[in-house]
Length: 222
Image (cartoon, rainbow, N blue to C red; front, side, top):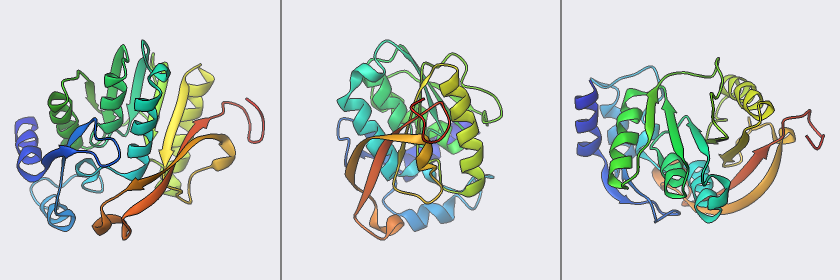
């Protein structure tokens, strides 16, 4: 399956610079609807397809922030959760992270992360797993883009991220103002106007914010 998945990514997604983070190149799909239909066939998975084939607004914002603030990750161990295309993980590796672990639950996404890492000349430790009922391991920085897209996912994600923060990790998320983001848990670091695929978002630019998670209770400093 891994070789087939890699071939599928290369065939159906074109390598091109990311609109808001042109320092990084990703295999990106030109035809959102067509690729969606293809992933409903032989490459069907339990995951909503195909997050890995597009540079979503939250991930672009987070990758831009990491690129512009390399001291956040330089010399540190990084976990990119729900890595998608690998954009944020690649940005962290380029910024000097000691090690970057990119975790995904979709086999096609894992293949895309590996292909994209190779295209950018960086090494990532890719992992096919759902780790939300576990912990962040030895990660010193946890990054997550576009993960608060449903109520159920938001609950699981927040629990995992709070565990990581309380263990001492710096936790940053990128989010395009989705309703399920628990804003009272976060401090805003930066906001961007991010170019996005109009066929997916119905607009050409979306506002996306980078947030830092507070380990304490809502409304407290910690």
